[in-house]
Image 1: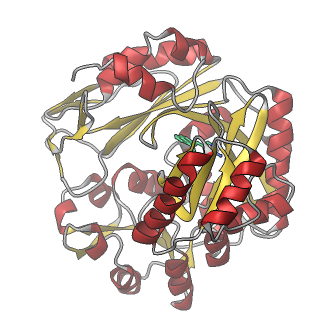
Image 2: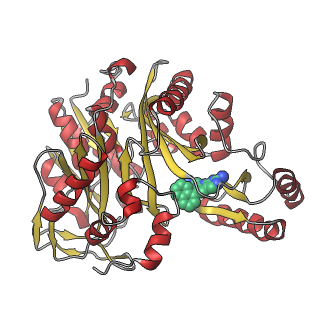
Length: 450
Ligand code: MV4
């Protein structure tokens, strides 16, 4: 096992990794920009090292600075958290070239899943159900039009390097194809330096269901059920739950086994998420994320596991500490993302936290790097905390969420807390009757003021 690891991240996820490491007796090194000298991850780690100025490319994304920080501190492994360098295959290769361990999958697995066409080809070959669409890339408009005519509209054109909704265009009819095709290509080129696109049947009202998988890197893998992350705004998830309110035990067991077998087959190492659109009782693969996700705590809650501890174990060459048979679901968990944003427009709202009170009690977990007196810098993501509740069933989790939100005090900046108070009044949220478009429609007529 490692003696010391470096966390190449900030905020709540840096704390999350430090906590797991500390329970395992592993020393921790925090890295920080000059804007984060007073950040909680710096205080909580055993050691810290400044790696650059506020801008992310010059600090949290600076590969030379991170490698140097490992050399200076003697850290043997790097945990990337999520975002930043967590899905950067080149970084993983450089880490290995310096005889350090990347706590995550191989560079090759990251590369394969980072290209959406290769990811889909790979998953299809492994028996994972995919959205019907083009065989690989579509190079010309004529080819795109042929596929549209054969498959029937609406279709969606996606950049193979896309992400976060960029490089994705819907063609409702044949008349929209030319513009959608050219725009998707142009966005792929300008955002990711890659204009390759592929085409899929457009699913109009799916849910976003993602399967948590975990591999030992040696042909062993398990699944930890699904999360329903359909409540999102502009491709930012805001409310996530596990298990999915509409997924039956039979559906879970079937898609879960399909996913676990697929990642076992490729000797996948560590945590991964296989994303699906779910419509009319069917799963359709869209993407795989090769990192620990923001919403991993809902899975941890219902399976009573520590996913970060498992990531560190597997990276150190140890086996996972559970088998599929050990993994049974206990109750229901919900996470809400608290952002320093002003409603109704969700505009970023950095500034000084004057008062902070964290909810507690049975079944409540708050992952946050805030403290009273802390100034949220304007340079980074606006996520300031995640409130996770766990109950014996969904109604209990919902009641607990309402109760915990009532205890939460964040003063000095605006946050998205009022959104959740409002959502918890809505019959569709209470019954779990929503899809990927529900929240954006709801916000058009229900704009909670900060
Ligand atoms: C789709 C789709 C409908 N049909 N693919 C959005 C981001 C990227 N991860 C994939 N996305 C979608 N792909 C087909 N064939 C609808 C979306 C989509 C979406 C997916 C998940 C969660 C939220 C979403 C919001 C808008 C569109």
